[in-house]
Length: 141
Image (cartoon, rainbow, N blue to C red; front, side, top):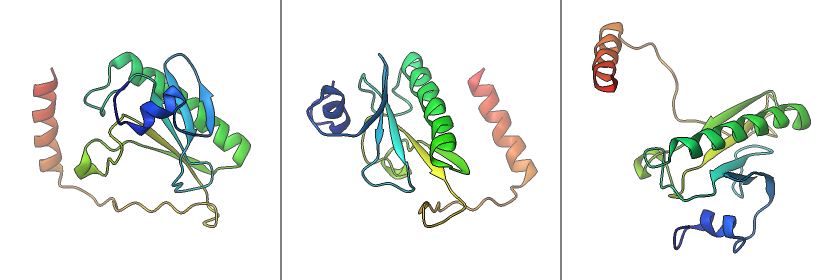
């Protein structure tokens, strides 16, 4: 647990939340600032600041929990799809510095879905894509 972390407080039971699912490693609870009907967060119970800090076993547990919850959102809420979102770092819109995945049900009916993203995909330059891919591949191997 980390001092002054609202998500650690939720795990400890010191801050209120609407729990959706829980296992030994992860906790899923409703987001209090939902982008759509059924928007929730999945976190590791053990504190990790962000994607670059989380141990692989906690990341695996959180991701599998998010997958289970996404399936439930489609089946039980009638979502037309699901977005998984992680923000890593303040400049990438992270506001709570405890790793979390947003599970955001997506609906054709926009009265149930308020999510708008700032990214609009456009075709990249293949030479740039190849160059960056090669650099990343070399550094990752």
